[in-house]
Length: 415
Image: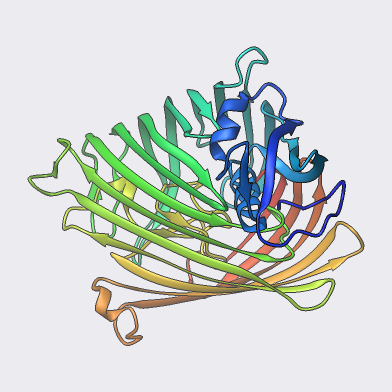
């Protein structure tokens, strides 16, 4: 989070007369874009509230790990010096996973920002597993207006699914996705994004739906909007903070309709918060849910629960301990989870989580436990914090008879 630091400590009451504004530690970023983020200009009078808002806005761009300020006497006015700690623009992330669902998988992601042009980026991502994909994208970056770009992903999908009656171990398909990021920007701790996608989905086998099968090749035109709030102190092991996300999708096959009707719509929301209980112990409650509007359901956008990480099998798949790999759900579901975590030493964590979900065909039955279905499960795990991401092992168990126990080992980035 932004921090405050004074080179001198004069007593200010009301407004501060500012003469010049200087940035330090911003690398090759264009200063004109950083000046635009500030809520004030040079040769103006500001308050500490103005300064606080501007520091939060700089931090919220995602370019800096911290931003400090100094107020320096300059005649009858003061100069403002903003010292920033720039995050690496080019990054490489990897992950390695072993589990009872996929056996083994490797993930790699590279974001390349050339030193001569900090406003352009090439991103390449690949997963090597029984369910592999590769994607590449080019983007325009700007701390003031955010990120824009285009990308392409090809996936040869093999996923295991089950409903109340049938388990299908291999649902095979080919999936090509063309994506245009029309807006992606940060503001304070919020991230807002809008994108449009064109997808070609080709089944290789009969694919399991909630009450039937499908082998129909389809083309989708999708509009997506997402908002996320995140002030967790750490991406993997936060000690305080909250996280909220909400997503809306409108899915069509002709840019307007889906199978002659209104487009198929999906809604998702999730909220979690860290409740510190002393120096080493924390509780992390979470509530999340999915909703769908439409009669014809596209196979890739069915509601699904299962696995330790959301979105690694299918877009609509949400993590749920005790279900694995993925169970197809009705149109609507609501879920709660509670994680208890204790830190041992500097980097060792032991934790346990319990979760429960209720699903129904009609949204009004979500709170009626006599309608629809209820699922519950939990997990215990050990995690070790490393500079490359967590080393983690867990065992989970649930109330489903077909798939009620599993294990998971992860090294590096979650994927």
